[in-house]
Image 1 (tube, rainbow, N blue to C red):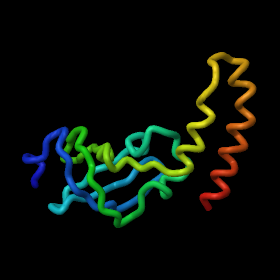
Image 2: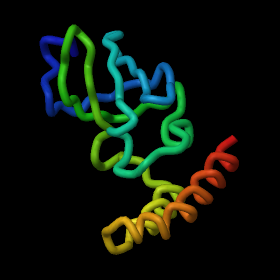
Image 3: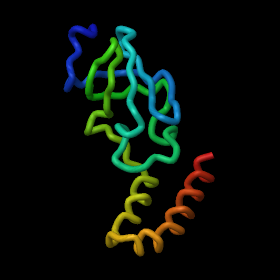
Image 4: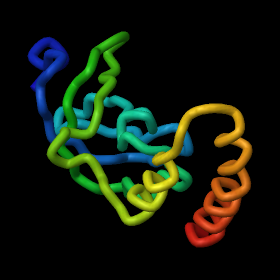
Length: 121
C-alpha cells in the first residue's frame, strides 16, 4: 500500500523499528514510516513504554493522519495494550475531586510511581 492508498481510518500492519520515551517508530511493508505517540498506546500514564511495545514487534495500527509522507497512528483498538501496571495505575483514580484529595493522594502516587520505575529496570 503506498501513501496515496493509505487513508486516515485505515488499519494497517506495521513493524516497530525503534522505541523511544515519547513513542514508537514503525515501518510498513512498503518501507513507509510513521510514529505511534506514547499517548496513543494506552489510556493510562506509561512509566516504561518498553513494557507496552517492543522493537521488531508486528502490530495492527489505525492511521490517524498522514503529513509530510509520515504516518501518525494509534494502536488498533482491539490491540491496545492492557497490563497489570495499567490496572494498578487506574485504581488511584477513584477519588473525589478537589485540592485536599490531591494532597492526600500525592504521596501514594509518588510511591507507586517510584516502585513502578524501579521494577521496570
